[in-house]
Amino acid sequence: MNLALRILVGLWGLGFGLLAVQGILDPRVFTTQFGINAPGASINSVRGDFGAFFLVSAVCALWAAWKPEKEQLLYVPAALYGTALTGRLIGLGLGDPASGANHQAMIIEGASVLLMLFSARRLGTG
Image 1 (cartoon, one colour):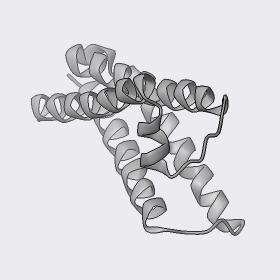
Image 2: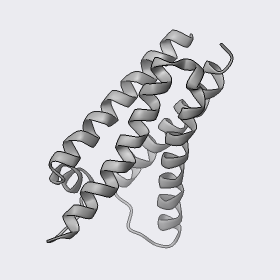
Image 3: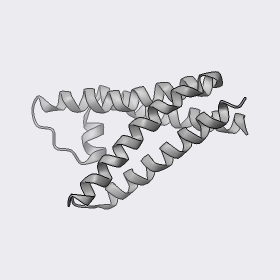
């Protein structure tokens, strides 16, 4: 079971790590993926903020997958994705428009939180 979780967390980390690197090198990856309009110098904020979000999450997941005794690192992506999901839910409650992309993002964020929390607990048991 632990090996399967480590592989799953590692694949999760690789996927989001690749997204981070692609978006840092070309922030249009983020603007296209998330439907963001970033005119002029604001593209630099997209590059930095989104890049940091995905890269930090991915590095923590990959590190914990490689060294399961570092399972506490999985609380970092759980907190980041949980906060993103909470922000989306608050936005929807305040009247933000809903879309299929919002729903897909919320499912991915929720699943990511559950994977990270479950893995942190399970990998911590040896």
